[in-house]
Image (tube, rainbow, N blue to C red; front, top):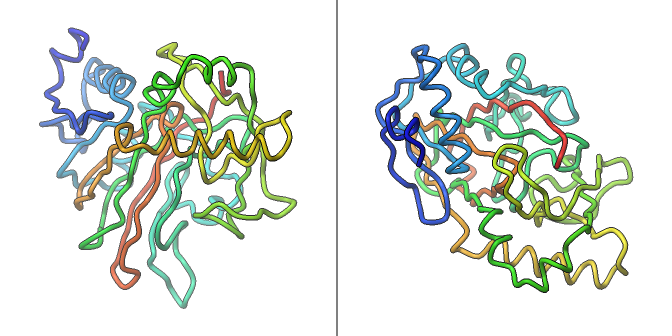
Amino acid sequence: MSRLVAARLETRPLSQALGAEIIGIDLRHKLPKEVYAAIIEQWHESLVILFRGQELSEDEQIRFAEQFGVGDLSEGHLAGFEQRPGLNLITNIRRDGNPVGILPDGEMQFHADQCYLEQPSIGAMLYAVQVPSHGGNTMFGNMYKAYDALAGDVKRRLAGLRARNVYDYNGNPTHRGDVSADAPTWVHPVVRTHPVTGRKCLFVNRLMSARIEGPPEAESAALLEMLFDHIERREFVYEHVWRAGDVLIWDNRCTVHARTDFDPHETRLMRRAKFRREAVY
């Protein structure tokens, strides 16, 4: 850990796979620039960072998220659920039978946000307002470790390969399945390089990576299934059990995330700030 992070932040690890809790910071207050810099450095180092016991207004959440670069929510399914620029709800609350946010119910397979666009989001900040008594956990996979653990011949096989990613929010928002012809799609490298850390990581996921470009369909399907199973091994995964007041920030460039099932009769209300987008390296 760098001297800057060590000097400014009190932390404890969330798991052996990834993650750090940052202790003793109240995000309602404007912080010194050097503390913001240390937080972002910790984020790059730990992939996922957690602040517990926060009580944030929308303004306070946006102000902190702006340190990472608040993104545009105008694409696709997010456009109708924007609370304000850069902020939306993930919740199962309904009014007159209609969801007030996105992704309201149940389990969701591993994915990387917006990998079906030319420039995916670099990350996101999720603030837990209300959580169910059980379930609705978020799991995060370390794509650096998943890549590093591959055998050398597999790494050589993946070099230069590209995967087509597609997302059909209206048809299959949480589980892999057939997609409509107009669902957004983009091709990205199977192995990408993080633009800040310079480290290589896998950039495919079960929910949205539809096929490897080039090989026959059967070969593509077999290779992807092997990679999906590999990425989701428990040694690469941290499962976060939410408490109200949690603020969790993840790096979308080097992680995948998923959600566990929960009782639909219990309320789950999360407020999300999505960060800016950038090209995949």
